[in-house]
Image (cartoon, rainbow, N blue to C red; front, top):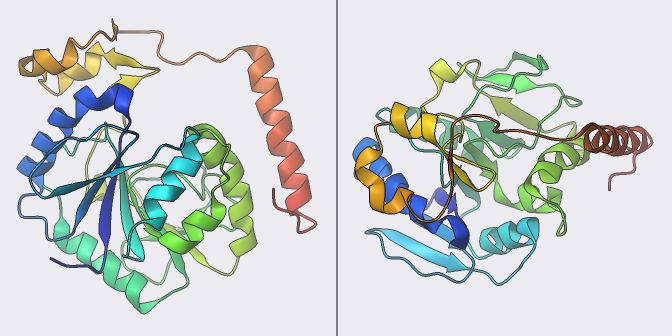
Length: 261
């Protein structure tokens, strides 16, 4: 077992039926993974070969994630959400190289294994990786990525939802302007190829992804009481969009005077 990095799969009790699919795909496309694998759940305990379950009674999402992270002894963590199924053989050699970069340079906060689309990237000193501008959006993002555990914990706020963590946590990340936030230049270059988590949307199964990934044989997992939808995946009202934008602007203004909330 290589303890230079841990793999933390972020699950939840209400979506426990997706785990059979996830770990089947992980075993298929990353056999003989040498890193310890942990699964974060609230109260449920499931058994998968080579996987340790971490439980947390924290009701708030970010606080629960922090509790998982703090229970790990490894300082570097590869975070994967439970519906981020690998769709091709994982290039573990490339991941090992990225972990080596982080071991050698403590200034690297994260290496996102997905492209970040905000055009705030420029070439880094590391081959095949881009560096994020210190005021770019989504410096903190929950796509598959390697993280410095201590700094990620410092960026989390207990009461925030996943989207608040990404948006507001990215503004807090500006405090670490001298550190390096890295990402791949294109999803085509990712050592972990996946569909960016569209299998479960707002508590429903995405029927289009079920068909694309050929998951019909997992009918016992898919028919778990959740709806199967084919359209209307994302909806946020105009008022919600305005409130969200105002909260972002407020935090960005504070960050310019060195206040990070």
